[in-house]
Length: 431
Image 1: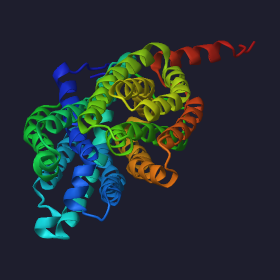
Image 2: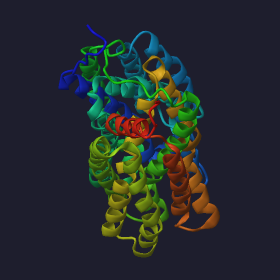
Image 3: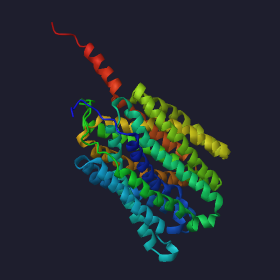
Image 4: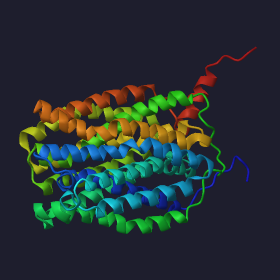
């Protein structure tokens, strides 16, 4: 094949990557949505707040091993291929998910219970840290250059659909079961559903076509240094993950801080997943047409203006309508931009190091900020006794993200070529 040719892969190939990613994220985020129940099961304490903090600290432990997974699985994907490493990460997260679902409670086995849960959580983090690089790189390489934003937005959409699924399952379980039943065994059903679906995702991924050596007609962004992209990428993803995990915290926030019914709290998660998934795809498509930078900066400017009014209304009215409305507005403003961040970073990296570099950039940012966000927000609310503490934390992250977005060069092929054409035409010819 000539190097100037490109190959468009069948839609089922893209669907296999997206579906597998959704399952992995479902497994990972389900822990966050049932943090209170898991805390009471494995981390009994004198106060509910202490139990919740212990559970959220274990949730954060899953982020500690993400950089290791990125180094091992992400870098191997640049050597042996995207497909085998996606299969490996998928299998590992399945083992971890089943382990958490089957771990006996603290009342049954004592201190061994939290030790096992932490161990399985670390394995989950290792697997997901290795998943991000190969799967995102696969979508970038499988996509026609002028539709990369849309293709990679499906990766973000799959993660948010996982949030939607977890939220709907949470609403169903909290509606059908009492609080004692949900604490005792109800939360395990949500984990069990993920375990039951994993074999289907594994079968889908076995049929993938390898993209590492596929020909491409799109030239690399040669003038952008990898070190600069790494620094900007960490800043962008740190801000994006902080915002996203504050939004994911809505379930716990509504129930523990605002005192709302558990069903309403899980309903906010479902709203978050639904609106985030739609905004992801919209952001990707818009970035293909208008460029990556513009579609990152405009929505986050609106997000900065909306975050305080949204949390103020929540603290004042504490109703389901306000909770769902505020969650929807913040989700759309956030995810329209954050779905573009991943494609902008991916496009700027050379193919030979794309999976490993992207995985490590993502893992470092997520580990430092994603894993600590919900713990820090809970701690801030407790220390300040101020329900607006999440808004301050989110706003600070948005400011950091906007600064990085302004410094990020344009990577969309259509707009990059226009910039090159303009800069070339502005240079006087030698006579």
